Image (tube, rainbow over all chains, first blue to last red; front, side, top):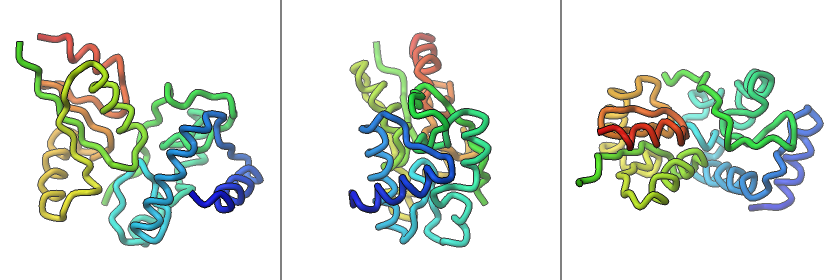
Length: 103
Length: 85
């Protein structure tokens, strides 16, 4: 995982009010999965959703996804568990329902 | 007693899917799982059609234990489904 990318990505999202949880191992796994999707598709498709490989079709599920704001507000975390409202939150115990509808 | 049929429709990149497969495997059970994102096109189409039959939303993970369909990582629902005769 490119540590510069992670640091910059984290800072950019924190400036918008979204944090990575303190579960560093889990966060690292999710970030690695985003990198896998970036290498595979050319963009960071959400690691918990099946991307089509077409950027325009997958636009709403490219991280940060279109559903993040509502999910973090309502559940404290986004769908895949990368972003949280509160760093102390244990995301492994939270199930966020899927808002995305596959075409 | 034979193990109930356990199928997990998963993505290789999805941490909730990893949690589900690991949870079941830690019980000494052997789920069949499909990392749908790694399948070749024709097999992927078939597996997605099967997934759609049990979960029209086609989300991951989807776990099938016997007749029970479990959406997301839900340890309590998995336990309950495994207990049922």
